[in-house]
Length: 73
Image (cartoon, rainbow, N blue to C red):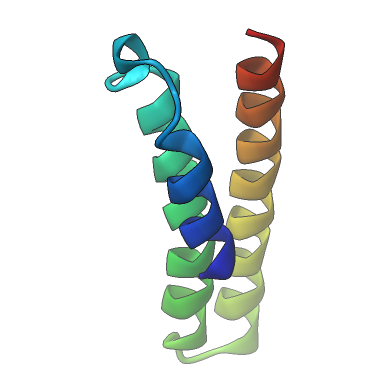
């Protein structure tokens, strides 16, 4: 959740033109990480929890890629 806070703070400086583009994508990917961890933790089996952790890891990769694109732009 600290990552989400950091992403929101840093992406606030993005140009207004990115409000519905990269800024929005980055924020959604960041929020997805702890959300999937929480959802997986609430499931009834370790197998399901691991599946949601895997989804969270995918969201982290997505976030990293989007952040690199934003930095390059």
